[in-house]
Image (cartoon, rainbow, N blue to C red; front, side, top):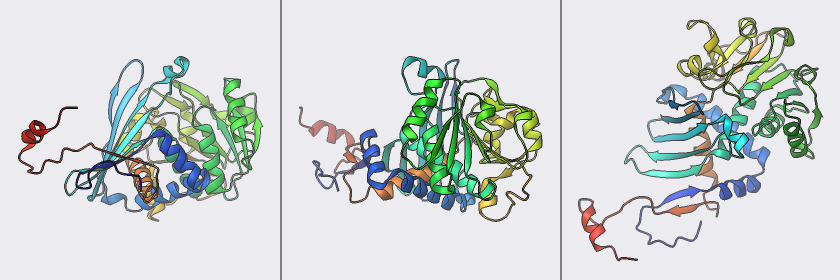
Length: 352
């Protein structure tokens, strides 16, 4: 436990900073942490019906989007604040930043505040790998990683840790991004192949992950590039007007989503009719719907991210920081001796 400089009666909130999150990752190990996050997400998907579910609340602008992602399992409430600004990369800023909070439903008091820029990258990768465990071809060991930005290394290591990936084939229109990813993945046990085009990256790949950042309806994969039997992990299209796949691919694929009301607005399936059939992932994980049913089937995870995944990640972090030094206690909540006398508490405060 951290040294607490505040009186023991105060209501203090654990805060996991960016530095603490990085220390926690090194303390646990990145692959064990990805496995742990995937397990937490799977547990919560299997109790999906307990959760409040709503599409994220988004404020869109020409530059990007700012979103709130709330949910509750009836005992704990959680939300994430997250932005998505593709232009930031050109200005030396992160495309995505985030923080999150858990609170006790019984009294409304926060019980955890955490950075989620790093944690979102981890939970996104853990979710991808968890879904691939259910949907990718048996024995899949090679992935094409198209888009080598901030997510690419996390995605690759999660697939290795959870699914047994052996080879990742990297491609990005920015060769410097590919070199960066290859350098970061050196020594991880993965065979890393730098490719000069998307078609080359997809050679021999049973899993295809697309993760590009431009806020536009792009065509990263065309129909002729996708053969039978692959699993597509489409994680770049995550807001209205932002897609990566040609619509013809969607018509040939069995599509799996987190929360249809959100995915139909933000995901690849915004290109399709509103009643186009999709399967919810929680149903596959709970055994009430089928996942991969044949060797020739194309499975597509139309990933946009959902609040329950963030809830799972925060819950995992809260459990992992117990009896460690990887958090600060924040004096975030007013705690007057008499709950009715908030003004008196302010009046009696000693000026600094």
